[in-house]
Image (cartoon, rainbow, N blue to C red):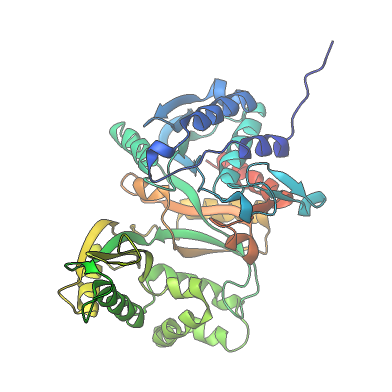
Length: 447
């Protein structure tokens, strides 16, 4: 008689990482079979989750699980997304969907697309729920698992889940999605590890700048061709960035970190009523991340022009990605871009956009639950602080049904590990990932 081999959390994690659930803006390119395989694999690897929780498939491939607690009121929602961004395997040191391990022990690294963003959280949540079910845990309140399938592109899977919950009158007491992590050196002079919990996220919008002209042969160019006019507009946009200021979540972060700062930074952080303008001007000098927390950013990401190298462009176009600071609006940003460019021949059009999210409170019982879980599982020396989420997440769709929407991934990440998100060589350390499971378990037991 052959005994069934019992897999470990790491082996289950690696098996899920090997499934290439890649999102594409052009949805005709999406391999839906991979998502079907992921669903089947989750059911096989997590039999208690599959058998004891109510499971729905929403909007094609988004997953919604309900774990009934003692009461359905004020449930907990744990979020993650199934999809990952595309890869170029030639740029990776390890095959991106092989989930290879390098090193030994807790510092060993799992190399795979999605190791952090965001299958790391998805599988850690499943592990925590499976263990709690095996231990006979009955949560005081319902627990929902909401796993969108296209966060990296449209995000309408999570939006559909939020709509389902809203239609059922469900008002979560706490929603937790991906976001900040445990990091060190978030500010020069602050050496303590910090759990960066997003209480809000910036808005996101896409603009197109377009210049039209008659076209013709490149041998007889006009005095100011369309690409040159477009380049001037881009230059003006780059030379005149949005103004800096400290939004409320950033002020709260700086105030929280003030007691842990060293040297001249400490009095600056401790006296924000006086020093805020100075800090707002200084933070952009510390790097791209600190620049992005004090201003709306606008960057050109795509350019296109003529159809051939010897043909004048009849249309030159640039795509501008704008991330809106808390307090700014889509309408206001468009007006400012037009004013800065100052050329009516450059058409500025909105392709899509959403204002910044509401700000969730960094006081009260839901916040304390997160901070307590951090201290209990990630280290008593870790300082939990409010944070302004720089990128967009699926959680933005849940702000209409809950006032307590937070963005935090319970992994202690180095600068190099954070830089690998959406880039080659994404990876996570084994010990770091296992501690993340404990965090979700503590949060569930406190629900």
